Amino acid sequence: YRLRREARVAWDVLESKAFNELIATGIKVYLRLLQKRKWGMVKTHGKKKALYDDGGLVFTYAEARAMGISTSQFLFVMNKLIEVGLVDLQKQGGMAVGDINVYAISGRWRAYGTEAFRRVEKSRTLWLGHDVRSNMQKKIATENRRGVLRKSVPVYAK
Image (cartoon, rainbow, N blue to C red; front, side):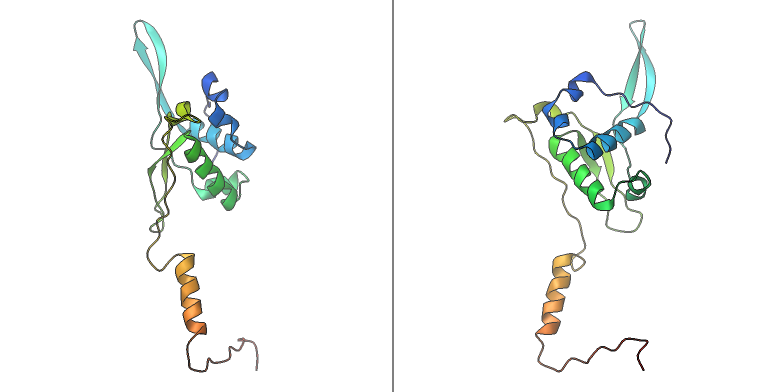
């Protein structure tokens, strides 16, 4: 997961209210996303300028673990980055194995803390019956049935 690219942060991002809301791990993840951007040089009016492609950024849980970030911490940080407007979710994965989230660097952070800010939250997408609440309901239904439940026996017992 080693990248040998620069991560350039604009001065107005560093001084923004949205950036100041981040914890250290959030800054680390944001810098990694900036590092993943593809860019190229464009010549305009005789001057060369770097043009960044802010979309199509993939950051997996495996990559976060390799960076020393736990799964729960990574989930919290990504939700915070989306909440403050530094990152947007382009495509939400999680419906099948190998289906990953795709992120984009956003400009919504400019309006963060004002009435004009458009709040976006990452929605939960799970198949019906595969979430924690459904499993809890199954357990309650099993405990409330009228018949006698069999006693569970460990495999190693005689």
